[in-house]
Image (cartoon, rainbow, N blue to C red):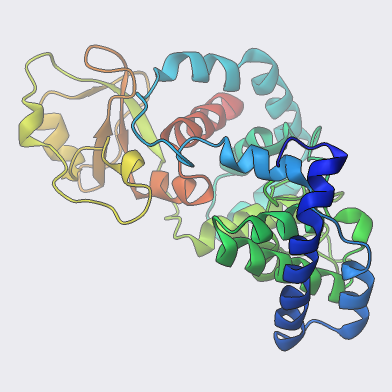
Length: 329
């Protein structure tokens, strides 16, 4: 049914069109204009490919697979080319970055690293028809509430003046340089260049201002690092620092973290920094050993949790932090 061929689409199209009638009424009830609804729903078709991609995601059907090592991921995502381009972007956007950091407290390098990880500084932002993808994922139903809401948010973007041609992005509905979902765009996108529009597709100023605003909204604490690479003594009794809480969000991500301790307490346990100094003794941090005992570990502050809010993956968040560190060196 989901092979992507024409006959499969034809078989599913009646059910899809029936659901579109329901979704259209929901959109109108939430304030979307009739003009926008008429323009979008006319000719909207199912995209089986995005459903295939969604069902193939880790966690969609299997949550018991082993977690791979971090080192290969790091070498691919914090590579020399991405660091070099990040430094170029950092230097080219310094005046904007400095102003946004002064306003938000979010480090310039973190904003650049997010841009670098999401779209390689705008070099690829996705070419899926965003509204078609979101409508198809809502129809599939595995996460209907999420995708129906994002589809309606996309319609509201059109009502705000975003053009239909701008609504391109990933198969899962993220768009623009920072890869915002439509609901995030509506809530947090910002005009950074003063032209009255939040153009996260073409404007570096708007892109960076929007990323900074996202991080402030998620709770970034100014003046505190995301974390620091550390050495853990061989004799550390990890059972004494084990995390005994179960996170309701992304439990497989957070179960790899230790419990919270102050930097002073970690120092007393023999944990020492690699290169950079540790934060102030009063700062709270958790320990993560992504490649197991004996390899580089990380003490992570609450700001690391803010990066996880952007993408709830330890590998992603670590790579953003490490790329930011490399960019500002």
